[in-house]
Length: 289
Image (cartoon, rainbow, N blue to C red; front, top):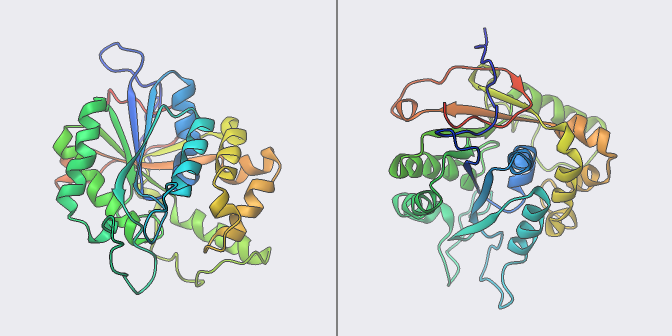
């Protein structure tokens, strides 16, 4: 039985101050859209300060002289969503496969970096922003990418170091993911994952505390996803799916990606207790608790 929260994601209000600061910590450029794009757009529209931090820059090798292309795309995407600040934590992608390649000459891969050092980098930013709410990832790192798992670990530790009062971990209901995969197969869209790859990923429905209806921000979310040209035009595992999504009419895009899910944890939960569950809302998370 889900817990009834009278307004689980109402306006961010702290100590009677209308504007609060939300920091979203993601693994790679484009993750901010897929998992939290509507939430970020809504928070910004409601007058809150929204900051996006990515651990990795989307480059497997050395960063080219002109900078990381995917970070430029991230800034374009963030601008569409109304994000006020974008930061890169300083790490390279780790890749999603059986081989962890050597670090490039100019920075460490995220999964090889010292987790405590990474957490302190994020905590320093959280302190500087006086963050009221941190968005991170569920314990499975969503679909299990090593960088996503590390985001979960580093995010929790950074929140503890910085004393952030609320942490919401972006996720999806596992059964919803499985239905989407079946739809992708039915439509014969190329999708480079095994059929059973999502059997133990994301979260069971019972672990989800907040379901956000963000359909009214579907146009922004679709445009923000389209700003990630490297992913849309690339050959990554979900590139074919991304190309289909950005071409969908806004109402259909909103039907498919117009909900976002989070599991809320507290500092006591981080110590080993379990968060309660909740139900769908259309407003942004109340950091006052």
